Image 1 (cartoon, rainbow, N blue to C red):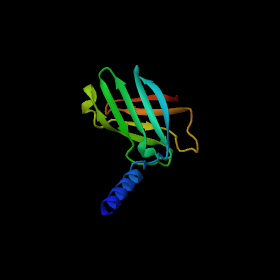
Image 2: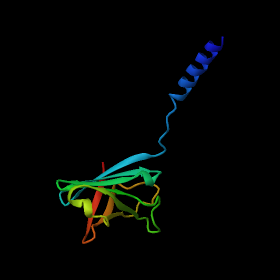
Image 3: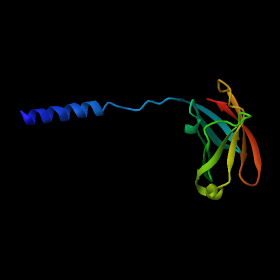
Image 4: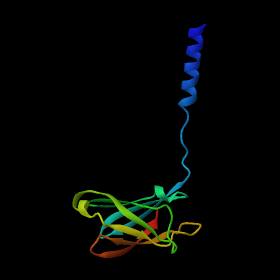
Amino acid sequence: MKKTLTTLSLLLTLFCILPAKAQKAYDMITYQATFYGNKAVLKLAGGYLLASKLSIRSKLGTQEFLPPGGEPDARGDLRFDAAQATGRFKDNKGSWVLIKKIDGPEYPSRIMAIYWDGKMQKTFVFHQR
């Protein structure tokens, strides 16, 4: 009897634990741009901006950018700081990208961005995919 109760409680515990999965509370909106002939991809998490990610890929390496804060500033701009880089961009620790005016109730189909690599500034536009 004791063995049957132990087996039954073990099976019940396993079946209750396995199906539990976390829900995602935000939608990912993908934007693309061409930056010096390289592909830039912005994955904007609607509803939870800390989950957003921006990457610039080229033959010389890849740069990944993440937002340090979860909210746009007073002007509606969101800054992404360099988080990870490979290749030639490995030493560009001061790089950042500023996404302009994304504080509205809906995200636009085009987003203007400013890139800074510590030496020069470049403006480009992301288009929603």
